[in-house]
Image 1: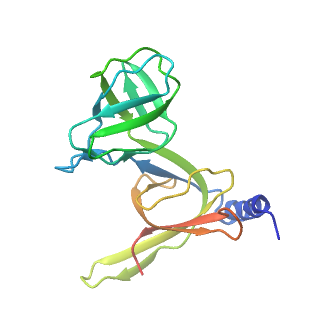
Image 2: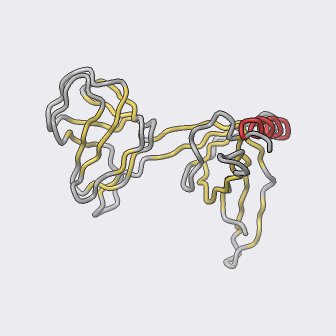
Image 3: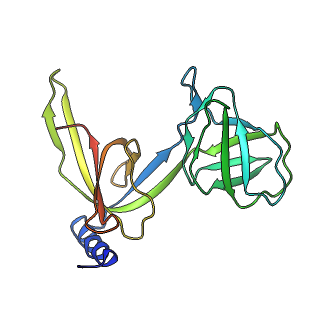
Length: 199
């Protein structure tokens, strides 16, 4: 049996060859929002004091729901911090626990303002793009989809449904509607993402 890393390297070379070196970016976005209205929010306050040198802070907002991806950036007291892990809001408490890097540069008081200054994280993959699949929908409007095969070599983040795909061949962004993983061993060799909904 071929080791997983060797398989990844073999598939990676094929994707780069037949994809002509195409690279695409997947953007995982914040889903933080006010649960009662669905309005996105990037403005929070600290729920409790935090000390210099700590690597975790707890933020809050009324009726807070949703999540922040790992790699998102928050700003407190003019200092920026990067999330080291994804953070999911506690809807009952209205709080969000954030593991950040670097460690806190100063003591922070409860009630201090926290801004989500970069509410997303981008990952770039080598990719091979399919032809566009366009079919007529029931309402007469074309229903289109395109798939991309993404190399998993040296990647730590699995693509997700709902990611925004940014193709380096253009400026338009589209939403990933499906993700399939090829895992002949103990880890993914490549991923196939679908943009659009043609069947």
